[in-house]
Length: 633
Image (cartoon, rainbow, N blue to C red; front, side, top):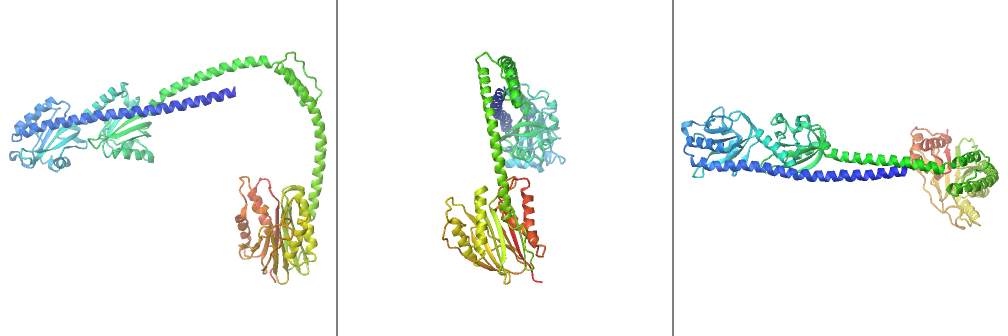
Protein backbone atom coordinates (compact mmCIF):
# COMPACT_ATOMS: atom_id res chain seq x y z
CA UNK A 1 0.00 0.00 0.00
CA UNK A 2 2.91 2.36 0.74
CA UNK A 3 4.45 1.55 -2.65
CA UNK A 4 1.12 2.16 -4.32
CA UNK A 5 0.71 5.43 -2.41
CA UNK A 6 4.23 6.49 -3.38
CA UNK A 7 3.52 5.59 -7.01
CA UNK A 8 0.33 7.64 -7.00
CA UNK A 9 2.20 10.56 -5.43
CA UNK A 10 4.84 10.36 -8.18
CA UNK A 11 2.17 10.12 -10.89
CA UNK A 12 0.23 13.02 -9.35
CA UNK A 13 3.42 15.09 -9.13
CA UNK A 14 4.18 14.43 -12.80
CA UNK A 15 0.62 15.30 -13.80
CA UNK A 16 0.72 18.47 -11.69
CA UNK A 17 4.05 19.45 -13.21
CA UNK A 18 2.84 18.81 -16.75
CA UNK A 19 -0.45 20.60 -16.08
CA UNK A 20 1.21 23.67 -14.59
CA UNK A 21 3.77 23.77 -17.40
CA UNK A 22 1.05 23.46 -20.04
CA UNK A 23 -1.07 26.14 -18.33
CA UNK A 24 1.92 28.48 -18.12
CA UNK A 25 2.84 28.03 -21.78
CA UNK A 26 -0.77 28.36 -22.90
CA UNK A 27 -1.23 31.46 -20.74
CA UNK A 28 1.89 33.09 -22.15
CA UNK A 29 0.89 32.33 -25.73
CA UNK A 30 -2.69 33.47 -25.17
CA UNK A 31 -1.93 36.78 -23.49
CA UNK A 32 1.01 37.61 -25.73
CA UNK A 33 -1.33 37.20 -28.69
CA UNK A 34 -4.03 39.22 -26.86
CA UNK A 35 -1.50 41.95 -26.08
CA UNK A 36 -0.57 42.16 -29.76
CA UNK A 37 -4.27 42.32 -30.69
CA UNK A 38 -5.05 45.04 -28.14
CA UNK A 39 -1.93 46.91 -29.22
CA UNK A 40 -3.07 46.70 -32.86
CA UNK A 41 -6.56 48.00 -32.02
CA UNK A 42 -5.22 50.88 -29.93
CA UNK A 43 -2.78 51.78 -32.68
CA UNK A 44 -5.73 51.70 -35.10
CA UNK A 45 -7.65 54.13 -32.84
CA UNK A 46 -4.69 56.49 -32.65
CA UNK A 47 -4.10 56.18 -36.38
CA UNK A 48 -7.78 57.04 -37.00
CA UNK A 49 -7.40 60.14 -34.83
CA UNK A 50 -4.31 61.13 -36.79
CA UNK A 51 -6.03 60.49 -40.13
CA UNK A 52 -9.02 62.65 -39.18
CA UNK A 53 -6.69 65.44 -38.15
CA UNK A 54 -4.75 65.21 -41.42
CA UNK A 55 -7.96 65.24 -43.46
CA UNK A 56 -9.30 68.31 -41.65
CA UNK A 57 -6.09 70.29 -41.96
CA UNK A 58 -6.46 70.44 -45.77
CA UNK A 59 -9.78 72.25 -45.36
CA UNK A 60 -8.27 74.52 -42.70
CA UNK A 61 -5.53 75.54 -45.14
CA UNK A 62 -8.17 76.23 -47.80
CA UNK A 63 -9.92 78.76 -45.50
CA UNK A 64 -6.70 80.05 -43.96
CA UNK A 65 -7.49 83.66 -44.89
CA UNK A 66 -10.94 83.60 -43.27
CA UNK A 67 -11.09 82.93 -39.53
CA UNK A 68 -14.90 82.82 -39.64
CA UNK A 69 -14.92 80.09 -42.30
CA UNK A 70 -12.25 78.13 -40.44
CA UNK A 71 -14.42 78.16 -37.31
CA UNK A 72 -17.48 77.03 -39.28
CA UNK A 73 -15.41 74.33 -40.98
CA UNK A 74 -14.22 72.99 -37.59
CA UNK A 75 -17.81 72.88 -36.34
CA UNK A 76 -18.92 70.84 -39.35
CA UNK A 77 -15.98 68.44 -39.17
CA UNK A 78 -16.46 67.88 -35.43
CA UNK A 79 -20.10 66.89 -36.01
CA UNK A 80 -18.94 64.26 -38.52
CA UNK A 81 -16.18 62.85 -36.26
CA UNK A 82 -17.86 62.27 -32.90
CA UNK A 83 -14.83 60.32 -31.56
CA UNK A 84 -12.72 63.52 -31.84
CA UNK A 85 -13.14 65.45 -28.60
CA UNK A 86 -12.16 68.77 -30.13
CA UNK A 87 -10.14 70.64 -32.74
CA UNK A 88 -7.89 73.63 -32.24
CA UNK A 89 -5.80 75.96 -34.45
CA UNK A 90 -3.15 78.12 -32.77
CA UNK A 91 -1.57 80.85 -34.92
CA UNK A 92 1.71 82.71 -34.80
CA UNK A 93 1.70 86.06 -32.92
CA UNK A 94 -0.56 88.67 -34.57
CA UNK A 95 -1.14 86.50 -37.63
CA UNK A 96 -4.58 88.06 -37.61
CA UNK A 97 -3.91 91.59 -36.30
CA UNK A 98 -7.58 92.21 -35.68
CA UNK A 99 -7.51 89.51 -32.97
CA UNK A 100 -4.34 90.71 -31.31
CA UNK A 101 -1.20 88.74 -30.39
CA UNK A 102 -2.97 85.50 -29.46
CA UNK A 103 -5.45 83.79 -31.73
CA UNK A 104 -6.37 80.13 -31.06
CA UNK A 105 -9.59 78.74 -32.52
CA UNK A 106 -11.12 75.93 -30.43
CA UNK A 107 -14.21 73.77 -30.86
CA UNK A 108 -15.23 70.79 -28.70
CA UNK A 109 -17.99 68.18 -28.58
CA UNK A 110 -19.26 68.87 -25.06
CA UNK A 111 -20.76 72.31 -25.70
CA UNK A 112 -23.48 73.81 -27.84
CA UNK A 113 -21.34 76.86 -28.41
CA UNK A 114 -19.68 77.68 -31.72
CA UNK A 115 -15.94 77.62 -32.30
CA UNK A 116 -14.28 80.36 -30.32
CA UNK A 117 -10.97 82.09 -29.74
CA UNK A 118 -9.37 80.92 -26.46
CA UNK A 119 -6.02 82.65 -26.95
CA UNK A 120 -5.25 85.34 -24.35
CA UNK A 121 -2.50 86.52 -22.03
CA UNK A 122 -3.86 84.08 -19.45
CA UNK A 123 -3.67 81.27 -22.00
CA UNK A 124 -0.34 82.08 -23.61
CA UNK A 125 -0.06 79.05 -25.87
CA UNK A 126 2.99 80.60 -27.59
CA UNK A 127 5.14 79.54 -24.60
CA UNK A 128 3.67 76.06 -24.35
CA UNK A 129 5.83 73.06 -25.23
CA UNK A 130 3.14 71.52 -27.44
CA UNK A 131 3.10 74.63 -29.61
CA UNK A 132 6.87 74.87 -30.17
CA UNK A 133 7.23 71.12 -30.58
CA UNK A 134 4.26 71.01 -32.97
CA UNK A 135 5.90 73.55 -35.27
CA UNK A 136 9.16 71.58 -35.25
CA UNK A 137 7.59 68.18 -35.94
CA UNK A 138 7.20 67.19 -39.57
CA UNK A 139 4.53 64.50 -39.27
CA UNK A 140 2.95 65.57 -36.01
CA UNK A 141 3.18 64.09 -32.51
CA UNK A 142 1.04 62.99 -29.56
CA UNK A 143 1.33 65.20 -26.50
CA UNK A 144 1.57 63.84 -23.00
CA UNK A 145 -1.86 63.72 -21.35
CA UNK A 146 -2.88 66.92 -19.55
CA UNK A 147 -5.88 68.55 -17.93
CA UNK A 148 -7.44 71.03 -20.36
CA UNK A 149 -8.99 73.72 -18.15
CA UNK A 150 -9.63 76.14 -21.05
CA UNK A 151 -11.33 74.04 -23.68
CA UNK A 152 -12.48 70.61 -22.53
CA UNK A 153 -12.18 70.98 -18.77
CA UNK A 154 -11.13 67.31 -18.83
CA UNK A 155 -8.09 65.02 -19.13
CA UNK A 156 -7.06 64.85 -22.78
CA UNK A 157 -4.11 64.26 -25.04
CA UNK A 158 -3.68 65.90 -28.41
CA UNK A 159 -2.26 65.07 -31.80
CA UNK A 160 -0.48 68.25 -32.96
CA UNK A 161 0.82 69.05 -36.48
CA UNK A 162 2.51 72.10 -38.00
CA UNK A 163 0.17 74.36 -40.06
CA UNK A 164 1.61 75.66 -43.33
CA UNK A 165 0.07 78.31 -45.59
CA UNK A 166 -0.07 78.00 -49.35
CA UNK A 167 3.51 79.30 -49.55
CA UNK A 168 4.73 76.49 -47.23
CA UNK A 169 5.42 78.91 -44.40
CA UNK A 170 4.53 77.90 -40.85
CA UNK A 171 1.66 80.01 -39.59
CA UNK A 172 0.86 77.96 -36.47
CA UNK A 173 -0.19 74.49 -35.38
CA UNK A 174 -3.32 72.38 -35.81
CA UNK A 175 -4.42 69.69 -33.39
CA UNK A 176 -7.13 67.23 -32.43
CA UNK A 177 -8.00 66.36 -28.82
CA UNK A 178 -8.74 62.85 -27.59
CA UNK A 179 -10.48 62.40 -24.22
CA UNK A 180 -8.73 59.98 -21.87
CA UNK A 181 -12.14 58.92 -20.55
CA UNK A 182 -13.17 58.05 -24.11
CA UNK A 183 -9.88 56.14 -24.53
CA UNK A 184 -10.56 54.19 -21.32
CA UNK A 185 -14.06 53.27 -22.53
CA UNK A 186 -12.66 52.16 -25.87
CA UNK A 187 -10.09 50.04 -24.00
CA UNK A 188 -12.89 48.34 -22.02
CA UNK A 189 -14.72 47.59 -25.26
CA UNK A 190 -11.55 46.15 -26.80
CA UNK A 191 -10.94 43.94 -23.75
CA UNK A 192 -14.53 42.70 -23.67
CA UNK A 193 -14.55 41.97 -27.39
CA UNK A 194 -11.19 40.24 -27.14
CA UNK A 195 -11.98 37.87 -24.27
CA UNK A 196 -15.77 37.49 -24.38
CA UNK A 197 -15.60 36.88 -20.65
CA UNK A 198 -16.90 40.00 -18.94
CA UNK A 199 -13.40 40.27 -17.53
CA UNK A 200 -13.69 43.85 -16.35
CA UNK A 201 -16.87 43.27 -14.34
CA UNK A 202 -16.56 44.22 -10.66
CA UNK A 203 -13.10 45.67 -11.19
CA UNK A 204 -13.37 47.78 -8.03
CA UNK A 205 -13.81 44.65 -5.91
CA UNK A 206 -10.94 42.92 -7.73
CA UNK A 207 -13.35 40.24 -8.98
CA UNK A 208 -11.82 39.86 -12.44
CA UNK A 209 -9.53 37.68 -14.51
CA UNK A 210 -7.38 40.44 -16.06
CA UNK A 211 -7.22 44.16 -16.80
CA UNK A 212 -5.30 46.53 -19.08
CA UNK A 213 -3.72 49.91 -18.32
CA UNK A 214 -1.63 52.48 -20.19
CA UNK A 215 1.08 54.70 -18.66
CA UNK A 216 3.23 57.54 -19.95
CA UNK A 217 6.98 57.99 -19.61
CA UNK A 218 6.86 58.97 -15.92
CA UNK A 219 4.55 56.08 -14.97
CA UNK A 220 1.33 58.10 -14.64
CA UNK A 221 -1.83 56.22 -15.62
CA UNK A 222 -3.29 57.38 -18.94
CA UNK A 223 -5.92 54.65 -19.09
CA UNK A 224 -7.05 52.32 -16.31
CA UNK A 225 -10.28 50.42 -15.47
CA UNK A 226 -10.52 52.53 -12.31
CA UNK A 227 -11.00 56.01 -13.77
CA UNK A 228 -10.12 57.82 -10.54
CA UNK A 229 -6.50 56.73 -11.01
CA UNK A 230 -6.10 58.30 -14.45
CA UNK A 231 -3.75 61.32 -14.44
CA UNK A 232 -3.76 61.24 -10.62
CA UNK A 233 -1.79 58.18 -9.62
CA UNK A 234 1.47 56.53 -10.65
CA UNK A 235 2.06 52.82 -11.27
CA UNK A 236 5.05 53.03 -8.90
CA UNK A 237 2.56 53.45 -6.03
CA UNK A 238 1.20 49.95 -6.63
CA UNK A 239 4.41 47.91 -6.36
CA UNK A 240 6.91 47.15 -3.61
CA UNK A 241 9.63 49.69 -4.35
CA UNK A 242 12.06 47.71 -2.18
CA UNK A 243 11.76 44.76 -4.57
CA UNK A 244 14.56 45.26 -7.10
CA UNK A 245 13.02 42.83 -9.61
CA UNK A 246 9.61 44.55 -9.65
CA UNK A 247 11.20 48.02 -9.78
CA UNK A 248 13.33 47.00 -12.78
CA UNK A 249 10.24 45.69 -14.62
CA UNK A 250 8.39 49.00 -14.08
CA UNK A 251 11.49 50.91 -15.25
CA UNK A 252 11.64 48.74 -18.39
CA UNK A 253 7.91 49.34 -18.95
CA UNK A 254 8.30 53.12 -18.55
CA UNK A 255 11.24 53.07 -20.97
CA UNK A 256 9.06 51.44 -23.61
CA UNK A 257 10.57 47.97 -23.55
CA UNK A 258 8.60 44.81 -24.30
CA UNK A 259 8.43 41.67 -22.19
CA UNK A 260 6.60 39.51 -19.68
CA UNK A 261 7.17 38.66 -16.02
CA UNK A 262 5.56 37.64 -12.73
CA UNK A 263 5.35 40.29 -10.01
CA UNK A 264 3.22 41.77 -7.24
CA UNK A 265 1.25 44.74 -8.57
CA UNK A 266 -1.72 46.43 -6.94
CA UNK A 267 -1.46 43.88 -4.13
CA UNK A 268 -1.86 40.92 -6.48
CA UNK A 269 0.62 38.27 -7.57
CA UNK A 270 0.13 38.35 -11.32
CA UNK A 271 1.59 37.77 -14.78
CA UNK A 272 2.29 41.08 -16.50
CA UNK A 273 2.67 41.40 -20.29
CA UNK A 274 3.83 44.80 -21.54
CA UNK A 275 4.85 46.61 -24.75
CA UNK A 276 5.12 50.11 -26.20
CA UNK A 277 2.49 51.83 -28.38
CA UNK A 278 4.74 52.71 -31.28
CA UNK A 279 2.92 55.88 -32.39
CA UNK A 280 3.30 57.39 -28.89
CA UNK A 281 5.65 57.31 -25.92
CA UNK A 282 3.11 55.29 -23.94
CA UNK A 283 3.38 51.75 -22.63
CA UNK A 284 0.52 49.26 -22.36
CA UNK A 285 0.33 46.39 -19.89
CA UNK A 286 -2.03 43.46 -19.42
CA UNK A 287 -2.24 42.23 -15.81
CA UNK A 288 -3.44 38.64 -15.29
CA UNK A 289 -3.80 37.59 -11.59
CA UNK A 290 -2.31 34.20 -10.81
CA UNK A 291 -5.60 33.10 -9.26
CA UNK A 292 -7.29 33.50 -12.64
CA UNK A 293 -4.53 31.46 -14.31
CA UNK A 294 -4.21 28.58 -11.87
CA UNK A 295 -7.77 28.19 -10.56
CA UNK A 296 -8.96 25.97 -13.48
CA UNK A 297 -5.79 23.87 -13.27
CA UNK A 298 -6.13 23.50 -9.49
CA UNK A 299 -9.76 22.43 -9.86
CA UNK A 300 -8.79 19.74 -12.37
CA UNK A 301 -5.87 18.56 -10.23
CA UNK A 302 -8.05 18.46 -7.08
CA UNK A 303 -10.62 16.32 -8.88
CA UNK A 304 -7.88 13.99 -10.10
CA UNK A 305 -6.39 13.67 -6.61
CA UNK A 306 -9.82 12.98 -5.13
CA UNK A 307 -10.39 10.15 -7.61
CA UNK A 308 -6.93 8.73 -6.78
CA UNK A 309 -7.59 8.85 -3.02
CA UNK A 310 -11.00 7.16 -3.38
CA UNK A 311 -9.44 4.46 -5.56
CA UNK A 312 -6.66 3.94 -3.03
CA UNK A 313 -9.15 3.59 -0.14
CA UNK A 314 -11.17 1.01 -2.11
CA UNK A 315 -8.01 -0.96 -2.93
CA UNK A 316 -6.93 -0.79 0.71
CA UNK A 317 -10.10 -2.36 2.10
CA UNK A 318 -10.20 -4.97 -0.67
CA UNK A 319 -6.59 -6.02 -0.01
CA UNK A 320 -7.11 -5.94 3.75
CA UNK A 321 -10.04 -8.38 3.54
CA UNK A 322 -8.16 -10.80 1.30
CA UNK A 323 -4.94 -10.67 3.29
CA UNK A 324 -6.76 -11.51 6.53
CA UNK A 325 -8.12 -14.69 5.01
CA UNK A 326 -4.72 -15.71 3.72
CA UNK A 327 -2.66 -14.99 6.84
CA UNK A 328 -5.02 -16.17 9.61
CA UNK A 329 -3.03 -19.44 10.04
CA UNK A 330 0.00 -17.32 10.84
CA UNK A 331 -1.40 -16.41 14.28
CA UNK A 332 -0.63 -19.86 15.67
CA UNK A 333 2.81 -19.79 14.10
CA UNK A 334 3.40 -16.34 15.63
CA UNK A 335 2.66 -17.71 19.12
CA UNK A 336 5.23 -20.46 18.56
CA UNK A 337 7.70 -17.86 17.32
CA UNK A 338 7.24 -15.92 20.58
CA UNK A 339 8.25 -18.99 22.55
CA UNK A 340 11.32 -19.47 20.40
CA UNK A 341 12.20 -15.79 20.90
CA UNK A 342 12.16 -16.39 24.67
CA UNK A 343 14.78 -19.11 24.23
CA UNK A 344 12.52 -22.13 24.11
CA UNK A 345 13.90 -23.64 20.92
CA UNK A 346 11.91 -26.85 21.47
CA UNK A 347 8.53 -25.06 21.35
CA UNK A 348 5.99 -27.11 19.32
CA UNK A 349 4.96 -25.71 15.94
CA UNK A 350 1.34 -25.83 14.70
CA UNK A 351 0.23 -28.40 12.10
CA UNK A 352 -0.84 -26.74 8.86
CA UNK A 353 -2.86 -28.88 6.47
CA UNK A 354 -2.83 -26.59 3.45
CA UNK A 355 0.20 -26.95 1.21
CA UNK A 356 0.71 -23.26 0.55
CA UNK A 357 3.26 -20.58 1.36
CA UNK A 358 2.30 -20.61 5.06
CA UNK A 359 3.06 -24.35 5.20
CA UNK A 360 6.45 -23.70 3.62
CA UNK A 361 7.03 -21.00 6.23
CA UNK A 362 6.23 -23.49 9.02
CA UNK A 363 8.71 -26.01 7.61
CA UNK A 364 11.33 -23.28 7.28
CA UNK A 365 10.69 -22.25 10.86
CA UNK A 366 11.27 -25.83 12.04
CA UNK A 367 14.58 -25.89 10.18
CA UNK A 368 15.44 -22.54 11.75
CA UNK A 369 14.84 -23.98 15.25
CA UNK A 370 17.44 -26.63 14.62
CA UNK A 371 19.85 -24.10 13.17
CA UNK A 372 19.35 -21.77 16.14
CA UNK A 373 20.21 -24.52 18.59
CA UNK A 374 23.42 -25.28 16.73
CA UNK A 375 24.19 -21.58 16.35
CA UNK A 376 23.76 -20.87 20.06
CA UNK A 377 26.17 -23.69 20.88
CA UNK A 378 28.71 -22.38 18.40
CA UNK A 379 28.19 -18.82 19.71
CA UNK A 380 28.98 -19.86 23.28
CA UNK A 381 32.22 -21.44 22.14
CA UNK A 382 33.14 -18.45 19.97
CA UNK A 383 32.34 -16.00 22.76
CA UNK A 384 34.61 -17.88 25.12
CA UNK A 385 37.44 -17.75 22.55
CA UNK A 386 36.93 -14.04 21.92
CA UNK A 387 36.90 -13.29 25.64
CA UNK A 388 40.20 -15.14 26.00
CA UNK A 389 41.59 -13.24 23.00
CA UNK A 390 40.45 -9.89 24.40
CA UNK A 391 42.12 -10.73 27.68
CA UNK A 392 45.32 -11.57 25.86
CA UNK A 393 45.13 -8.28 23.92
CA UNK A 394 44.62 -6.40 27.15
CA UNK A 395 47.66 -8.09 28.71
CA UNK A 396 49.68 -7.40 25.55
CA UNK A 397 48.65 -3.74 25.67
CA UNK A 398 49.74 -3.44 29.27
CA UNK A 399 53.05 -5.12 28.48
CA UNK A 400 53.54 -2.78 25.53
CA UNK A 401 52.83 0.32 27.58
CA UNK A 402 55.21 -0.89 30.27
CA UNK A 403 58.07 -0.59 27.75
CA UNK A 404 57.36 3.14 27.31
CA UNK A 405 58.87 5.53 29.90
CA UNK A 406 56.20 7.00 32.18
CA UNK A 407 58.55 8.72 34.63
CA UNK A 408 61.02 11.35 33.51
CA UNK A 409 64.35 12.33 34.94
CA UNK A 410 64.32 15.42 37.09
CA UNK A 411 67.49 17.22 36.11
CA UNK A 412 68.57 20.80 36.26
CA UNK A 413 69.62 20.98 32.59
CA UNK A 414 66.72 19.33 30.73
CA UNK A 415 63.03 18.60 31.18
CA UNK A 416 61.29 15.72 29.38
CA UNK A 417 57.70 14.58 28.97
CA UNK A 418 56.13 11.91 26.74
CA UNK A 419 52.58 10.90 25.88
CA UNK A 420 51.23 7.86 24.04
CA UNK A 421 47.56 7.01 23.54
CA UNK A 422 46.92 4.01 21.25
CA UNK A 423 43.78 4.04 19.09
CA UNK A 424 43.01 0.44 20.11
CA UNK A 425 44.05 -1.95 22.86
CA UNK A 426 47.53 -2.13 21.42
CA UNK A 427 49.23 0.19 18.98
CA UNK A 428 52.29 0.72 16.85
CA UNK A 429 53.71 4.02 18.17
CA UNK A 430 56.71 4.28 20.48
CA UNK A 431 58.97 6.80 22.14
CA UNK A 432 61.96 6.24 24.42
CA UNK A 433 64.97 7.98 25.96
CA UNK A 434 67.89 7.37 28.28
CA UNK A 435 70.98 9.31 29.38
CA UNK A 436 74.51 7.98 28.98
CA UNK A 437 77.84 9.80 29.26
CA UNK A 438 76.11 13.22 29.54
CA UNK A 439 74.28 12.53 26.33
CA UNK A 440 70.53 12.21 25.93
CA UNK A 441 69.54 9.41 23.53
CA UNK A 442 65.91 9.73 22.48
CA UNK A 443 63.64 8.45 19.71
CA UNK A 444 60.08 8.38 18.42
CA UNK A 445 58.56 5.97 15.89
CA UNK A 446 55.37 4.95 14.10
CA UNK A 447 54.98 1.35 12.86
CA UNK A 448 52.91 0.61 9.75
CA UNK A 449 49.70 -1.38 10.17
CA UNK A 450 47.58 -2.05 13.24
CA UNK A 451 46.97 -4.55 16.03
CA UNK A 452 49.35 -7.41 16.93
CA UNK A 453 51.77 -7.22 13.94
CA UNK A 454 52.34 -3.53 14.56
CA UNK A 455 52.76 -4.12 18.30
CA UNK A 456 55.35 -6.85 17.68
CA UNK A 457 57.38 -4.63 15.33
CA UNK A 458 57.09 -1.77 17.83
CA UNK A 459 58.49 -3.98 20.60
CA UNK A 460 61.30 -5.16 18.32
CA UNK A 461 62.15 -1.58 17.36
CA UNK A 462 62.20 -0.49 20.99
CA UNK A 463 64.43 -3.40 21.94
CA UNK A 464 66.87 -2.84 19.04
CA UNK A 465 67.07 0.89 19.91
CA UNK A 466 68.00 0.17 23.50
CA UNK A 467 70.61 -2.48 22.58
CA UNK A 468 72.23 -0.52 19.73
CA UNK A 469 72.36 2.91 21.37
CA UNK A 470 73.81 1.36 24.49
CA UNK A 471 77.26 1.18 22.82
CA UNK A 472 76.97 3.54 19.81
CA UNK A 473 77.04 7.34 19.88
CA UNK A 474 76.58 8.16 16.19
CA UNK A 475 72.85 8.44 15.35
CA UNK A 476 73.55 7.54 11.72
CA UNK A 477 75.27 4.29 12.72
CA UNK A 478 72.57 3.43 15.29
CA UNK A 479 69.81 3.81 12.68
CA UNK A 480 71.71 1.78 10.07
CA UNK A 481 72.22 -1.11 12.53
CA UNK A 482 68.55 -0.98 13.53
CA UNK A 483 67.46 -0.97 9.86
CA UNK A 484 69.63 -4.01 9.04
CA UNK A 485 68.28 -5.97 12.00
CA UNK A 486 64.63 -5.10 11.25
CA UNK A 487 64.96 -5.70 7.49
CA UNK A 488 66.30 -9.19 7.94
CA UNK A 489 63.52 -11.70 7.25
CA UNK A 490 60.88 -8.95 6.84
CA UNK A 491 58.90 -10.72 4.09
CA UNK A 492 55.74 -8.79 4.90
CA UNK A 493 57.59 -5.48 4.25
CA UNK A 494 56.34 -3.90 7.46
CA UNK A 495 58.23 -0.75 8.34
CA UNK A 496 58.65 1.88 11.02
CA UNK A 497 59.13 5.61 10.53
CA UNK A 498 61.74 6.64 13.09
CA UNK A 499 63.54 9.69 14.42
CA UNK A 500 66.61 9.32 16.62
CA UNK A 501 68.50 12.13 18.32
CA UNK A 502 71.63 12.37 20.48
CA UNK A 503 71.82 15.60 22.51
CA UNK A 504 75.09 16.60 24.18
CA UNK A 505 73.90 17.97 27.51
CA UNK A 506 77.05 20.07 27.94
CA UNK A 507 77.34 21.72 24.53
CA UNK A 508 73.64 21.39 23.51
CA UNK A 509 74.71 20.10 20.12
CA UNK A 510 72.00 17.86 18.70
CA UNK A 511 72.96 15.12 16.24
CA UNK A 512 70.06 13.29 14.66
CA UNK A 513 69.00 10.92 11.92
CA UNK A 514 65.51 10.72 10.44
CA UNK A 515 64.09 7.55 8.85
CA UNK A 516 60.96 8.75 7.03
CA UNK A 517 59.38 10.30 10.15
CA UNK A 518 57.62 13.62 10.72
CA UNK A 519 60.00 16.60 11.13
CA UNK A 520 60.37 17.59 14.80
CA UNK A 521 59.48 21.14 15.83
CA UNK A 522 61.99 23.55 17.36
CA UNK A 523 60.44 26.16 19.63
CA UNK A 524 62.43 29.25 20.53
CA UNK A 525 60.97 32.72 20.01
CA UNK A 526 59.08 31.16 17.10
CA UNK A 527 57.68 27.74 16.20
CA UNK A 528 59.56 26.16 13.28
CA UNK A 529 60.40 22.73 11.92
CA UNK A 530 64.03 21.62 12.02
CA UNK A 531 65.53 20.60 8.67
CA UNK A 532 65.78 16.84 8.16
CA UNK A 533 66.78 14.39 5.47
CA UNK A 534 63.80 12.16 4.81
CA UNK A 535 65.76 8.88 4.33
CA UNK A 536 64.02 5.49 4.15
CA UNK A 537 61.82 4.05 6.89
CA UNK A 538 63.31 1.21 8.97
CA UNK A 539 62.83 -2.38 7.80
CA UNK A 540 62.38 -1.84 4.05
CA UNK A 541 65.87 -2.15 2.59
CA UNK A 542 68.90 -3.77 4.18
CA UNK A 543 72.29 -1.96 3.94
CA UNK A 544 70.61 1.38 3.20
CA UNK A 545 73.03 4.29 3.80
CA UNK A 546 71.41 6.92 6.04
CA UNK A 547 72.39 10.57 6.39
CA UNK A 548 72.68 12.24 9.74
CA UNK A 549 72.51 15.95 10.57
CA UNK A 550 73.21 18.22 13.49
CA UNK A 551 71.94 21.50 14.88
CA UNK A 552 73.11 23.72 17.70
CA UNK A 553 70.48 24.25 20.38
CA UNK A 554 70.42 26.89 23.08
CA UNK A 555 69.08 27.08 26.61
CA UNK A 556 65.36 27.78 26.49
CA UNK A 557 64.89 25.84 23.26
CA UNK A 558 62.16 23.21 23.13
CA UNK A 559 62.22 20.18 20.84
CA UNK A 560 58.82 18.58 20.13
CA UNK A 561 58.53 15.16 18.47
CA UNK A 562 55.22 13.64 17.33
CA UNK A 563 53.64 10.98 15.11
CA UNK A 564 51.15 11.58 12.33
CA UNK A 565 48.27 10.74 14.68
CA UNK A 566 48.55 14.37 15.87
CA UNK A 567 48.11 16.27 12.59
CA UNK A 568 45.69 13.64 11.19
CA UNK A 569 43.34 13.68 14.18
CA UNK A 570 39.86 14.07 12.62
CA UNK A 571 36.65 15.52 14.05
CA UNK A 572 33.09 14.42 13.32
CA UNK A 573 33.11 16.43 10.06
CA UNK A 574 36.27 14.55 8.95
CA UNK A 575 38.35 17.75 9.10
CA UNK A 576 41.97 17.19 10.19
CA UNK A 577 43.83 18.93 13.01
CA UNK A 578 46.73 19.65 10.60
CA UNK A 579 50.03 21.41 11.17
CA UNK A 580 48.56 24.93 11.16
CA UNK A 581 46.47 24.24 14.28
CA UNK A 582 49.42 22.44 15.88
CA UNK A 583 51.67 25.45 15.30
CA UNK A 584 48.99 27.87 16.56
CA UNK A 585 48.54 25.77 19.71
CA UNK A 586 52.26 25.87 20.50
CA UNK A 587 52.47 29.57 19.67
CA UNK A 588 50.10 30.28 22.56
CA UNK A 589 52.76 29.09 25.01
CA UNK A 590 55.51 30.97 23.17
CA UNK A 591 53.53 34.22 23.33
CA UNK A 592 53.50 34.03 27.14
CA UNK A 593 57.15 35.05 27.03
CA UNK A 594 58.64 32.36 29.27
CA UNK A 595 59.82 28.81 28.76
CA UNK A 596 57.12 26.38 29.85
CA UNK A 597 57.66 22.92 31.25
CA UNK A 598 57.78 19.96 28.87
CA UNK A 599 54.47 18.63 30.15
CA UNK A 600 52.84 22.01 29.36
CA UNK A 601 53.66 21.64 25.66
CA UNK A 602 52.43 18.06 25.62
CA UNK A 603 49.24 18.78 27.56
CA UNK A 604 48.54 21.90 25.47
CA UNK A 605 48.50 19.82 22.28
CA UNK A 606 46.60 16.91 23.83
CA UNK A 607 43.89 19.25 25.18
CA UNK A 608 43.58 21.14 21.88
CA UNK A 609 43.25 17.89 19.95
CA UNK A 610 40.55 16.65 22.33
CA UNK A 611 38.65 19.95 21.98
CA UNK A 612 38.93 19.71 18.19
CA UNK A 613 37.84 16.07 17.65
CA UNK A 614 35.19 16.19 20.42
CA UNK A 615 33.26 12.88 20.29
CA UNK A 616 34.82 11.59 17.09
CA UNK A 617 36.52 8.18 17.54
CA UNK A 618 40.33 8.11 17.59
CA UNK A 619 41.55 6.82 14.22
CA UNK A 620 45.31 6.54 14.89
CA UNK A 621 47.79 6.32 17.75
CA UNK A 622 48.71 9.71 19.25
CA UNK A 623 52.29 10.07 20.49
CA UNK A 624 54.15 13.20 21.67
CA UNK A 625 57.52 13.86 23.27
CA UNK A 626 58.79 17.25 24.44
CA UNK A 627 62.40 18.06 25.46
CA UNK A 628 63.09 21.42 27.11
CA UNK A 629 66.68 22.69 27.52
CA UNK A 630 66.41 24.56 30.76
CA UNK A 631 67.92 28.05 30.84
CA UNK A 632 71.03 28.39 32.97
CA UNK A 633 70.47 30.24 36.23
